[in-house]
Image 1 (spheres, rainbow, N blue to C red):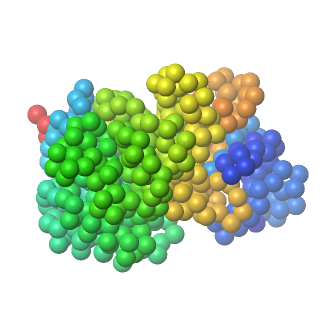
Image 2 (image 1 turned 90 degrees about the horizontal axis):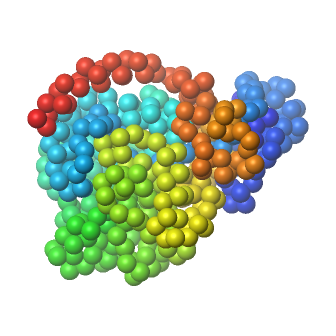
Image 3 (image 1 turned 120 degrees about the horizontal axis):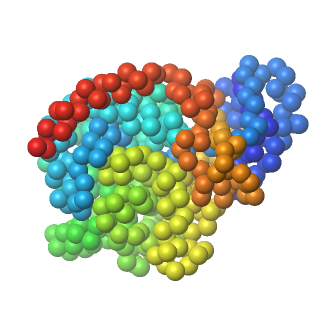
Length: 437
């Protein structure tokens, strides 16, 4: 064995919700070969290259952040107290002034490092220069889903439609077969990309058997805008264009009617819930309990640090499990099992990667995290899943493995000195502040 982790409380996040009180995993060639009680792992541990004592920890699959703009971490806290539409105008001004390949890479390292240190091993990211996102993810040792961006205005990189098509195709040529990249095409939204260009983006994704991701129905204003222009609200507009299927990932989905919920269920489309961003931008409350009842795949995301101020999937997880109770008046609106699934298995399904990530099961990538449970807020622990959903903080994540390789040890990155990145970002701060002055 390359790696054995033993003596942990194992929360597998498999379909049966299996929890092993004292157990672990055995890993070979980057994949899990055994999930079992510790006593059954002892013979494998005897000759393993690395043995990790998981006592006092929960072992679980790495989190999947299904919607993020990691490089926007450069603008954390820059634009505040505005709803989405005027907020975006200021955000785009700052991005246009600051972003190029070098600064985008810098922002990606900053944002992805924050995610990895908090236990996110895979992230679906929509941003300019997606190859720089991959470069940053590979520096740190995590998986990423990204790809060609479609946006009708020139945008940060100044590309026209032909340039965007060419860039999307180049991304597949370079990364289409990579195990650490789930390639996608990501038009920004129905209000910033024309119907014709949305269809073009989807055709590229379909030709490569790839993912298609866009923002959808985030605000009432967006819904009204799309309906006034095209005669249908957002989800019905996307369905009319033939864009919805099991490889489609829609970020937000806050403002849906009953028919649109039925459309998402019928087409197998994933909705990504971003509770903190939706709260902070006053976008509203997504109908998550109704979507879950309709058997829609609901994954979880942080959105960017510019809209939520950090990239904390544990905060997103806790909000997803709590705000809908208050909003619906039902204490059982979202269960802990449903919430933890949003952050693991549902994210894996969104990426059409449920056979590779999202749970601790033999044959899957050994993407795993160890969470310290010997802290005052973790004792006593009657149910580990309840603890994960309602009590765990990102600072509790001590060790992270991706493909069986330890990329975080004792709360520190193993492959990059983050202090260098922090110094670069701090030196850029005056320019960023001046960009919206």
